[in-house]
Image: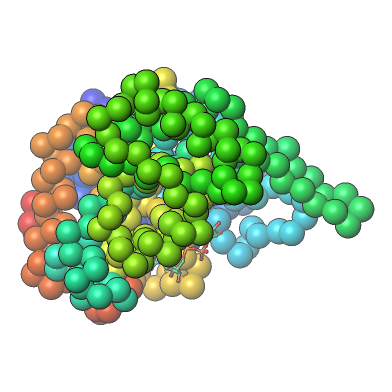
Length: 341
Ligand code: NAD
Ligand code: IPM
Ligand code: MN
């Protein structure tokens, strides 16, 4: 019986987590859940974003399913203060989850929900492979005497393993995104990507793109991209941008992989304080993260595909939450997906 570490978190996190667990339970009858308070909920209860006990329990689980963490209640400008987001950084580092996969597949039924023209997004099927345990998020930082700094560090090994993940996921083309006209880390990145490509993946086309130009091309010609591999913060920013190809940030799932133990699955979006408590959050990003959990976390392709196809069918029949221009509540979207299973 696979045990899932369930970390609903804050804001709409618990709302979409409840919805996605209902869907998971409708396709996989043997899952058990071990729930922990993390993020702001962890700070309120224990004074820390995630306790050592929760980390130990998570490590012993078969897969981690996280809603979202953070919110204005726990935002602080004080350098070094406890933050809700610390839960994410600790989980990613302690579990060794360096490879964050963010698939972006606009569904036919939602072409009209995107602010981009239909002819631009038709046929888009892209994957952003975001490095998740290095770069600015984990470099030395501080504030002193009216001066603040964050440092971006990458080693050859860190770059090699993430670009391999990118090439392995690609059928024909990888776009490596950097800022090699400015940053030393990017120049090392480009050198390593070029070498790994030549030595190990010569049959896949490799192109290098500067991050600013990539941001433009993502909306000008999104179909061009198959796999984008990039460092931590560039991947964070580009994936929120790319989410609008699907109609809403609320649609995107992610899988964080690469460790020896359990992998982690969560939507790309955050805790959405502006709509928390209204019951209107789009649960699809979290439901599709459940599909990735089944596929990558538990190796259950059939069940994963069943969830994805149920989401497709429910949207085909017209169900739309508010972010997609409709009026359906979280519960109504969830019910529509369950009816297709
Ligand atoms: P956000 O992703 O929470 O929200 C951005 C916008 O998208 C908001 O208008 C929100 O209402 C909308 N949105 C997001 N998810 C939605 C959904 N499922 N359905 C409908 N609308 C949705 O980003 P933010 O407002 O910049 O950040 C809020 C908090 O979330 C911050 O504390 C941030 O640190 C945190 N955050 C957490 C995660 C995570 O836990 N993985 C990810 C991103 C942001
Ligand atoms: C994400 C989020 C996090 C990140 C925040 C909440 C720290 O935006 O998972 O995309 O930047 O990694
Ligand atoms: Mn983000």
